[in-house]
Length: 276
Image (cartoon, rainbow, N blue to C red; front, side, top):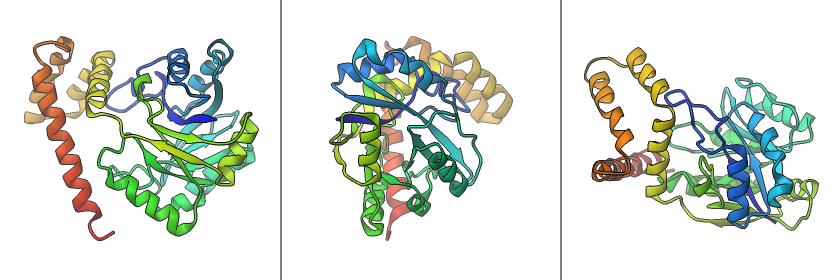
């Protein structure tokens, strides 16, 4: 069974952009079918509305839909697989894992060493498995560190695309020998997994960032006006309207910005993880 364990819909919302995920639950399930996936877990941030909606389209597209949630704990993000009720954020990692287990679910320590420090770090060992490959971790180094840590701690390993649009689905794929949700979750719990991975292309990430801004335009403009000041506010306010002209004459500018950002992320990742 080819599984996508980490994906988001329009029910995932961010701080600076309202739409963190840009495709509807049905579009994500359809996208999973088009990518040849057998199962998808919808793991929106701190909500299960997207997962509940997606489950309605499982039969239509011939894809197993497993309900999940990406939970913001006080120590970093944890993905819950196979739960039925939403788990509230901001609890400790220990409390969150206990709540996942009380529902019969599986706890995954996702992007544990992400350079934005949104993962659990070494506390990923509390979970049933560690996400040792996240296709959005474009610095590469955080994935290597996660794999090295999981191997040293003898943790079960999974991959995830962290797909915020349907084009990203299947880039971080976990493969198990199972034909049911129960069998798939058991395979993850016992470490009987194989991983098939590829990093999300930079142009896809760039396109996602721009589409997010277009969809969240008024929300993001309000955020800029209320939270930024000085040159940062002026520049952000001046550049935001450019997203409405994409694709078009602004392509070159956005391409340049994406390569500069990629270089910055890689440099920061190397400097942050030197010696680890």
